[in-house]
Length: 277
Ligand code: A2P
Image (tube, rainbow, N blue to C red; front, side, top):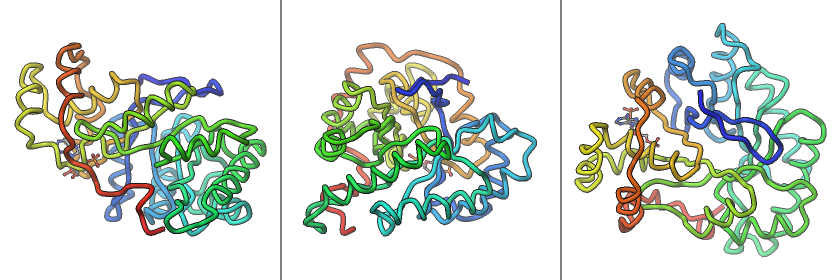
């Protein structure tokens, strides 16, 4: 399993199993993912599947120590005390005594919070406390645009190690991704397949045919070649397997350039500065 090193020296498996919108047969799906070799599972309090994921972790033969487990604090739990409490509840549901990575799910934004920066900084202080306590091996952000990350870096004693963003061909968030790379923050891609919205794109089909791979595989390799961690999700055993165990190949520089040049496509519509929470 390939891994990427984050700023504190911890290795993250570069392909993780995304679980957003996974609310049915969760335990069986996670068992399947573990069976085919995933060792990185990404969840969040708001996904409402932590308990079932915890059950799957209880029932698997795979050792907890070889699984990289991520969760996220939801928007209604921002702030110092609430974040500490939310973390404990996630641990309970996941039936584990530590997390590998804990993220702030979305930044508070100025549209809804005049004191957005103070809220985000207070939430980050709680993340630092959790990290120092040893209950979480790495801490980071999710959906933080460059300016939100800058707000955190101004006063951070411990810098964020990860930022999880929507990233796929047609939605590259270049400003934020290059800022994170320059600051040694590993970027994780959520919706690396554009939540399925890219899979019938004729341009991507044409490129993927050159490598004899599916558009899904092309999208994953594209993000990996850009140095990101990918979090594809699927409930289909064939796709669960192929998203992890595809044959190694390299997209040519020219094709990387062509993919990067695509106009916007597949955007989820969720923009951190305009969401109503
Ligand atoms: P399914 O569960 O039937 O596999 P994303 O990870 O970008 O959010 O995309 C998830 C969507 O893409 C789901 O609808 C999932 O459907 C589909 N999907 C995931 N992997 C593949 C694949 N290898 N081939 C085709 N569709 C896929």
